[in-house]
Image (cartoon, rainbow over the protein chains, first blue to last red):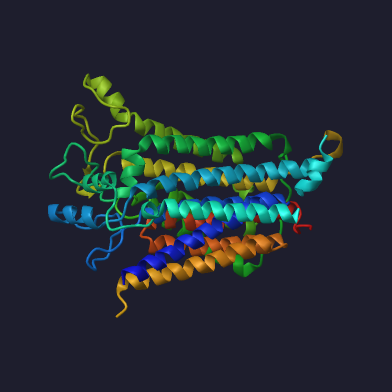
Length: 132
Length: 262
Length: 87
């Protein structure tokens, strides 16, 4: 049974890496500006999912792992909570990373509007030909 | 160009395969977490054994975001603010000065349903934000849910509807600045109080520490508020919702450059 | 005979495979409105993955941001500029 669980977690890891590769390819080789913005958001979201995946905890002796929120407030529950719950530190860092990625995407959209009103097109090959 | 693309794809896949073989045991989750995470889980609500290191909030993630690692969140809020100011500064001279008459919007059924669900969206967002220290939630989550409302109103009615009701860009900037001012004031509140009293306290202090004995109130008449966490969540909700509204209104109002202004 | 842990992992694997398919279709599509909709579908599948990985705080941020606000802003930009990606 151990090897089936490890295999299923490896499937999740392999599909996250495939998302990395496809979105990185699209940032470099697709010529339209908005397609690049879409691929950049997919790339940063996959990086955040990877960080949360590392912080997971497998089940111990068929007890399910818990969300990092305490429900009972007595001393024995606090001791058990520290031995069963999932890592809360990557979740706090990913919260910050999502908001910063959102701020960068908003700024890129404003920049795209300025680019369109100067060059009348958003195709990067045309802009490279027209510059200067 | 096709040969270059194929070569880049193959090099990316080979590099990722190398990464997997070298770091496999460290990437796959196991049945134990790191010792730092065990300390944070043990110290997040522990008035029994760790009274001088605890945060008194049953939610570990909110305690880390606003108390254990509070400086990260302060600077991330300022990064968001800077991105918004940069966007506003870029499109400053392209904003239309006058507001034309309101557009048609969508049909009557959609408008009536939007009028019914608009207070519900605000209530759900405020509930998620203000309970952030007891259940999963917090300032960002509640602020983002409330920020969906201006976008729905802009699509269903029109931008002129929103501006003629009084939600102009200037008022949203004022609300956002008030939110950020509230966050800064809460961060140094205990520091100022202890300066007046003559004792010693840190700048981002929430509960008592081994060498600084001032603390924010833990509960009000029996309901747990965990010191500065509740106030941080409230001000962050206002700041995030107002910031997104500014971005939507400005993006809908830009007009194209005239030919002679180029 | 199927333990609960294996059931959760099977669900995680299925959701990740469908999300890779959605990313591929978003990258290959030439109509930009359809590409934005495929990207929002991929974000919805990532939210299910966040809830299965026991991170409800992140799921609560991710749903309004990546399914509602980012596609909304991108669709406003598409309506003011061009819609089709040329070859």
